[in-house]
Each structure stands twice: as structure tokens, then as C-alpha cells.
Amino acid sequence: MNSVAVAVAPEEVAHLPLHRVAAIGVGNALEFYDFLTYTFFSIQIGHTFFPAEHFTSPLLTSLATFGIGFTTRPLGGFIIGRYGDRAGRKPAMILTFMLMGVAITGLALTPSYEQIGIAAPILLVLFRLLQGFALGGEVGPSTAYLIEAAPPERRGLYVALQYATQDVAVLAAGLVGFALSGLLDPAALDAWGWRVALLIGVAIVPVGLAIRRALPETMDIVDRSVRTKVPWRLVWLGVALLASGTICSYTINYMTTYAQDSLQISAHLAFGASIASGVCMVVFQPIAGILSDRVGRRPVTLAAGVAMLLTVIPIFLTVTSLRSVAALYAAAAALGAMQSFYAAPVLIALAEGLPKSIRSGSLAILYAASIATFGGSAQFIVKYLIGVTGNPMAPGWYMSLALAIGITAMALLHETAPAVAGRKR
Image 1 (cartoon, helix red, strand yellow):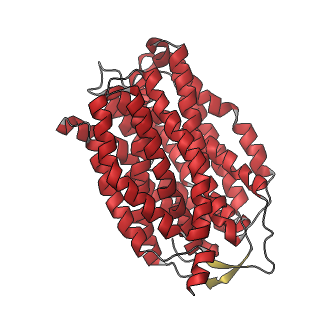
Image 2 (spheres, one colour):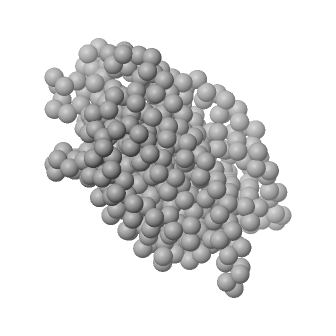
Image 3 (cartoon, rainbow, N blue to C red):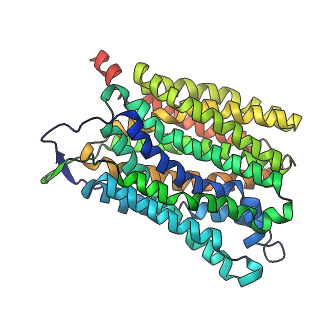
């Protein structure tokens, strides 16, 4: 996040209508679908690439490989995010989409360990690294684009589409997993069913590319002689907020695997947890954005964070006690709804607080570094804690710690919503 040239706007960029901006969300959803499908099929992928006769714990190794995909996200954020500040938001968004298409195609078509031996997990890791690089460069340019395309009083709604479309991806991956696990027996799901889920994402890559190429550019002309100071207070608070949000998010996404591994619920029924949380997030993320436009980013985040902190332990206690499908779905839905109001305003506040000339690169690096460190390790840590302690309540306690940190950071952050900040002045 080095200081770079500041942008000069000789004329105001025209605000785009919401239906045009939704095109950003379509591409974003496709990228996150490809990335998140891995976690929903982590058990099956573990059986394919890390068979029990060669690896002590196929699931734990599979989750570690999932985490590897996060290690290149900061690099992608640095390179592609800064490219978005120099060449434009649109070229950066097209580049990330093309790279993701290559990675997901390679991952879906990589032969199993039984077919090519140790080369199989090596290729899996390489494609996961490319996936992470592409996704690391996605959030900065696309969020910068949404902020710049939105009328000031509707920035919350526009940027909430960033998270909402990620949740569309969660829902889509959950629906695909639910359908495949219902149609196929476990052996077929292990052998090729999970590949079908990934290839669905590959099939719609050309659509996403066409949509992004049709978008106008929002970045202004750049004056290289003027430097911009990085707001470091915002950066450090942002790291804490994004760490908190991503731990919660990926722990909720882990519910499908958690249901199979810890609660012994069948794969077909376990995928319903992803559907329940995905539906709630898709519905409530835009509402969270609208509400944050009216009352502010801080009040919405703080209220949701406190509500989740007070209820997450009772929710996991109920799930582990009842071990029923109904309790699992209700828990996933409740956590998904609260997470919507907790996470969406954070990204909006950070994007608003960063100067436009360094918004794409700084946000990309900040987001990717936080997600790589805390998101990439979340599911591995949860599984490890459950194994070490023998306590299936571990996800709830881990989320509680993350929430406490995030609530504290948001309480220290200045309000950025134009309507609310204007009233205070």
C-alpha cells in the first residue's frame, strides 16, 4: 500500500444504474462459486487426492490445501489491485476472471492420486495457488468500481452487492452439492461428482467475460506528480474487522463439512445448511447495505456483532445437543442472517475511507492479506480444535473470539456514510 499518484477528475463520473452495476456482481459470484465449491466438497476432494492409505487424515490435508489457496491472495491483491489503480478497474476485473477460469478448469480436470500419484496433489496445490491469486485481485478493483459507480447516498447498497453476490455463490454451490449428493451414491460423488460442480462454473466463464467487457470505466485521469498518504489507522482497524468477519464467514461455510464430520449427517442433507445460510445472506446483504446508508455503517455492524456474540454459543450448543437436520438448518440460517448485517457495512466503510487514487490497490491488499491469514486458516483451525479437544463446540468459541475483536475495532472506526457523517458535522 505504498503511496501512488493521485487521481484528478476533470469531470464527475456518471453514476450507473443499479441494473448495470449488477453485472459486476455476476462476475463476482462466478469467481466465488469456483473458489467456495472446493470447501463444500472438501471430503470428496480429500478422498480423490489424499487417499487414506497414503495420508493420515484426508480431510485435514484437504482443508490445508484449501488454505493454501489463500497464501497467494495478498500477491494477487498487490499486483492486480495496483494494476486497477494504474490501468483501470475494468482491465483488472477482466484479468482476474480469465485467471480464475484457467485455474478452475485445471482443478476440475486434474487426475486422481490413483491415476498419476503424487503429481495429482501437486497440480491441485498449483491450481489452488492460481485461484487464490486471481481472487486476491478481484475484490479491490470491483469494490472500487462499485463505490465510484454509485450515487453517494446509495453506496451501501451498491457495495453490499459485493458480499451479496459472494453469497449467491454460496447458495449456488450448496444447491449444486445438494442435487449431486442426492442423485449420486458416495462412490460416484468421490469419483467424479465434485468435478461436475466445478465444471458448471467453467461453463459460464465466457458469460462473465462478456459482461465485464461491456462495462464502462470509472477511473479518472491520473496525475503522477501528486502523492497520496495512506490512512494507517483505518488500515489497522480494517485488518481487525476483516479478520473477524472472515473467520465468522468461513466458519459458517464450514457447516456443511461440520455436519458430515462432527454430527454424522449425510452429505445430501448436510448441503442443506449451505442453502439455508446462502438464502439468508442473499436476502439480507442488500438490506444491510440500504440500512447502513440510512443509519450508518457503525450502528449496523455493532448491533449485528453483539447479537451474534450473544447467540453463537447457544446456537452451537443446540446443534450439538440435538444433532438434527432441523437444528442444523436453523443454525445456519440464523448465523447467515446475522453475518449479513455484520460483514457488509465493513467493506463499505473501508472502501469509502480510502482515497480514490489508491482505493483499488490498498483495498485489495488489505482484504487479501486479512482473508489469507485468518480465512485460509479458519476451517483448518476449527477441525484441529475439534480433534484436539474432542469438543464439537469449538467453532462457536472460535467465532466468539473473532467477534469480540471485530466489535472493538468497529467501535473505534469513524463513521463514513455520507448522510450520517454529514448530519454529525
